[in-house]
Amino acid sequence: MKVNEVPQDNTVEYYEGVKRACYAVNDEGKYVIVTSSGWSDEEFINGLAVKELAENLEKTRKAVLAGEKSPLAYHMERRQMIPEILGKTAGVAVFRVRRHLRPGIFSKLKGSILERYAEALAITIEELKTVPQN
Amino acid sequence: MTETELTSGGKAFVHHHAAHCETGVTAALFGDKGLEISEPMVFGIGSGIFFGHLPFVKWVGLPISTYRTQPGAVFRKAAKRLGGEFVTRKYRNAKKGMEEMRRVLKSGQIVGLTTNIYWLSYFPNRFRFQFNGHNIIVLREIEKGFRVSDPVLEKPVDCLTEDLLRARFARGPLEPHGFMYYPLSINPSPDLRAACIKGMEDTCNMMLRIPLPIFGIRGIRYLSKRLIKFEKTQGFDEACRQLGMIVRMQEEVGTGGAGFRYMYAAFLQEAAELFGSSDLGELSEEMTAIGDIWREFAVTAARIIKKRGKQEETFAKAGGLMLICAGREEELFKNLRDVAGKLKA
Image (tube, rainbow over all chains, first blue to last red; front, top):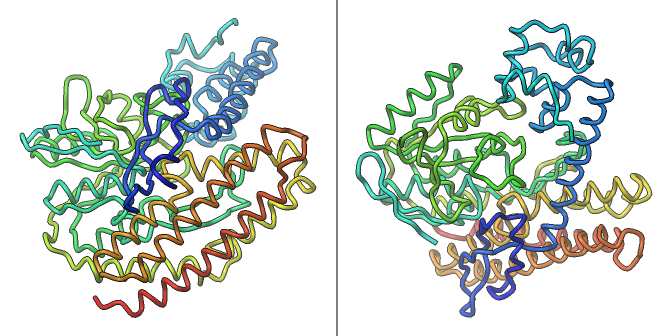
């Protein structure tokens, strides 16, 4: 890749102004570091992955409001966690985390367990018990 | 792009913008102790370039393809081959880990840390995902947090204590356990030539001789053959998701372009000057050409996913490009093995 071939597509929304270092060959055939302001193809592919995460999160939020899942499922997904990671972070066995994703069981949980989840997810207990309405 | 900062000992630290976190941190730690070494040099000596496709190890539900060796290996190998003595510590107790870090920072020493990138809130949101292998340098303590030199960013940034604590002691795959490392002593005039030869030979062995079909050149061939049949075996949507993942691993996760191939070409170029070897210079040019094909593959992949159905660019073409890469890389590493064998330390 030549220096003038380094993509400068200025993908502001995606990079939030952060520039990335790329290796490219200059006119004398030497490798130098060039900062790139973004590449639209890469932005497109990353955008798909981000969109998929957001769509799944939205589905979970609706399921919580419909009473099919507990708010814990929403907050876990928001932190991009899975029961295995959340269980280890909060110090709760994975099978219990999976049980707590059911609304009936979650609503009966003791304060001490909720505290551990809130701490692991970096939110307050009040936030943990609810999901955004829209 | 460079930027100068002060450590708590009052010493100047020059922040270099780097393509990859681990090599950037390692080069900076060496530089802080007075051994100026470039990022590609660390990458080459530490044998960072690799390929692996792990269809059965899933990450966010998708198989992992990697263009580099496992996290931590580059640092370990480069430190050993350059004769640097490093203190490396892991902690069970998070509080103790933070206290130890403060103590070391107060002595004027900067430290490298392995962290989880999701909890580092100074990153743009779209880069933040649960990955436990991001490396950063902490320069000094400031009010409410720490001054951090993250090599993949242009300038040093501030990081909240709470964020850093969570990032260092995050759980999940590849747990960092607060991994902290800093140089104790560094050989001021290491045998660069011997280190380069070792790095090259190790790389050639990994790329050519691992007797498993998912690593090295065999891994590239395996993935490209899977890719050609992708649409039939996985269905179009799933095939697109997996293809997108391959491109993300190649371009997005701080590779300097083309899945580290350009960075390795830069290393070969530096080595060519060091040894005065025109053979290495030619190999560097060939590596650049291979990198360009990898880029073309990424562009093709993006088009396949964008077009959705309109059959201008096909999975067969993407797989074909990758097969070309496999063939040319095999030739290149075989030549490199011969050249490295003849070089004198």
